[in-house]
Length: 97
Image (cartoon, rainbow, N blue to C red; front, side, top):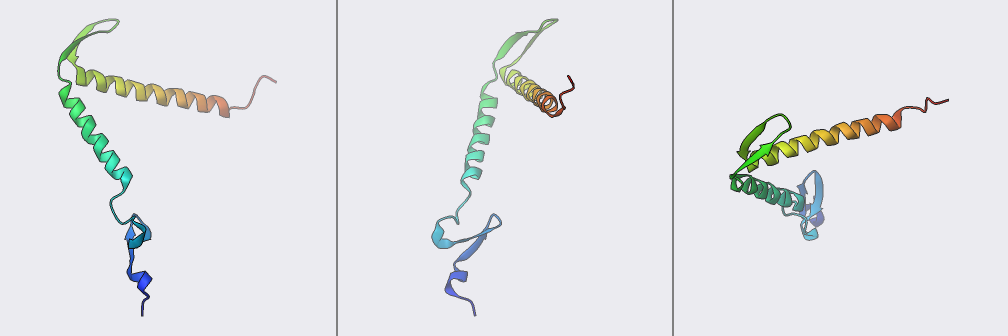
């Protein structure tokens, strides 16, 4: 037969936790992630006023939400390029000798 402790064990997130441990509810990071996603969606749809963007070669009028999205994408691309450059710079052997 089974012991009483094995009956109190539930599988959650690939790990076994006893019901007495208090970890049988939803994951805290999942809840925080859902709150952040909802906040970002609300933020995106509330920023609908038009702004004038002056690029070097042309002018563009667009909604603030699209400006934020473009800046986010450009920031991520710049981060990836700089981190790749930094990693390659550090991995190459010193060729000055």
